[in-house]
Amino acid sequence: MFKAWFAIPFWQRVLGAFVLGMLIGGLAPEVGVALKPLGDLFIKAIKMLVAPLIFCAIVSAITDLNDGKKLGRLGAKTVGLFMVTAVIASAIGLTLASLIDMSPATTLTATEQAEKQIPSVAQVFLNFVPSNPFAALTEGNVLQIVVFAALVGIAIQRLKERGEPLRKTIKSGAEVMYEITRMVLQLTPIGVLGLMSWVIGEYGFSTLLPLAKFVGVIYLACLIHIIVVYGGLIRTAGGMSPWQFFKAIFDAQIVAFTTCSSFGSLPAAHRAVTERLGVSKDYASFVLPLGATINMDGCGGIYPAVASIFIAQLYGIPLEWMDYGLIMLTATLASVGTAGVPGTALVMLTVTLNVIGLPLEGIAFIAAIDRIIDMARTLTNVTGDMMVSRVVARSENLLQDQAHLATESK
Image (cartoon, rainbow, N blue to C red; front, side, top):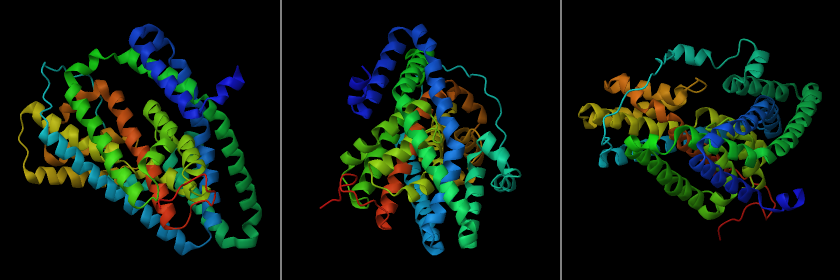
């Protein structure tokens, strides 16, 4: 039985579980909700990997890259591409939301929404540095883990021979974590089944009806951004066809969509870009945690843009061209500025609404379906991370040599 199961391609197992989960949640909501522990088990297993995997992988990546100038160039290219796609994402969100009337046909009732405290600029930057790195590892504070791991990697580089024993130890630790990751990822179909059954069973399709146009615009904007922008960059700068790219990352996309967690998707994304996109492990270990922290095309580009215009339409408040420009600028800067802040999407929306003077109470109308929206946001963010890893790796000759991993365009 197990032999027949593993003979099925992994992406087909994940897709089958996804469809089955939707059917169970739609036809038998109580059963769907009861299957939630399967999804919780998968998420806990993934979270177990994140802190040690990121720490070992980033230290290993920095020590293997060696050349400090090359590392700086890689960082600049990576962050620059993240920023460019964030601006484009905001523009797509603004355009669609402006063209489509999202006003609900029925009167909406606000749901309870706790006020979100926006940290000061100083506090955001202070949160980059861990006061206790072991506490950061224990609590899974990814941004602080990334900073500490980078410092350890740079220190090992500077110590040269004296740092070699620790380098080898952490390198071995990274290989062990990669192997554990491969083991845990076999649980993906079970986790996807549990999570999709629960989401559909808990929320139901009827919950979406009053906000169907709002949800539809966000999903449409994400789809256009993924297919047109990411697909176009993959074809022109990534050296492979969009079809090959999306086929290679499909299972990682499903994990992102169902878990709503960029960090939780890291193991699946790492496997996809190294085993099927041909990106070197060193660069993948550098770009993916960084992208999960600051690349927010879905949360920081599309979502604040569409939600701001929706709330303006809801309250009958007209927006000027200056407001649209502020939405785009604020959303793009906030996507990097709120890195590591819990509830990033909500914080970025709050910042955007404050800047253009829209009522924060409007958030309460869309809070009930945030999980449904978050699925599309996270899918977009993680797809962007994987696209950037391929594009920058190709520009820096960091693709693996195996011919079966990546087919260069002729």
